[in-house]
Amino acid sequence: MSLQAQIDPNKLPQHLAVIMDGNGRWAKKQGLFRTIGHESGTKAVREIVEACAELNISYLTLYAFSTENWNRPRLEVETLMKLLVSSLKKEIKTLRDNNIKLNAIGNLDALPKKAKSELLDVIDKTKDHTHMTLTLALSYGSREELVKTIQEISHKVKNKLISPIEIDEATINNHLYTRDLPDVDLLIRTSGEQRISNFLLWQIAYAELYFTETLWPDYRKNHLFEAILNYQNRERRFGKTSEQLEQ
Ligand code: FPP
Image (cartoon, rainbow, N blue to C red; front, side, top):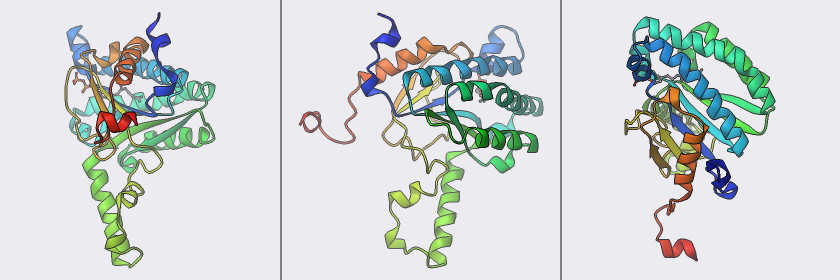
C-alpha cells in the first residue's frame, strides 16, 4: 500500500507548520551557490502545498523568512525577496486551481515595497478561497510577535478598554499575527537541526515535533506522508493520562 493510502483522513493535523531548513547545505554539497539552494527550495514548497491540499489539511504555515534572516549577506536576502515575488506571480495559478487562500504573518512593513505589494495583491486575489489557508511567515519572529502583542494589550489597559483581570489566553491569541489560525498540531523541521528558531513559540504549546535529516530542496510528498503517518501513531494527551483519553 502506498504511504498516502495508509494515512487516516480522520486523524489529520488541522494545522501543519514547517521550518524549511537546509537550502544552503544542499547547494554547498553540490558546489553551487546558496541562492541556487533557495531556488530549488521553491520546488519543494509547491510540492508540499499541493500535497497538503490533496490530503485536505486546512492550515499550512511555512517559515519562509525570519527576522534574523535580515542579517544574511545582502545578495542572499535580495535573492530570497526576488524568489518570493517570482513565486507569488507564478503560483497564483496553483492557489486558484487548489482553492487555496494565501495569508502572511510577520512584520510585513519590513519587506521591500515590491515584495509587500505583490504579497498583498495575491492575498486579496485569493481571499475567498476556502479549501486551505497557506500562511507564509515573512520577517517573522515569535518574540517580536509577543512583544507587539503585550504592547497592544498594555495600550488597551492604559485606555481602560480592558482591565488586567480580564486578560486570558484568548486575549493573547486575539492579538497575535496568527489570530485567525488554530494552534499548530504538527511542526516539521528539515535538515537534521532540532530547534525551534523563534517560530510560533506560543502556538506550538501542544504541537507534536517531527525532525528529519532530509534537506528542504529534497523534500517531497512521500517525506510529508511519512511525517503524517508518524504523527498519527502518536498519542496526544494534552496533559491527561492515557486512561482518561480512552474514556
Ligand atoms: C533555510 O535554509 C531556508 C530559508 C532561510 C528560506 C526558505 C525559502 C525558500 C524555501 C524559498 C522561497 C520560499 C517561498 C515561500 C517562495 P538555509 O539557507 O538556512 O540552509 P542552511 O541551514 O543549510 O544554510
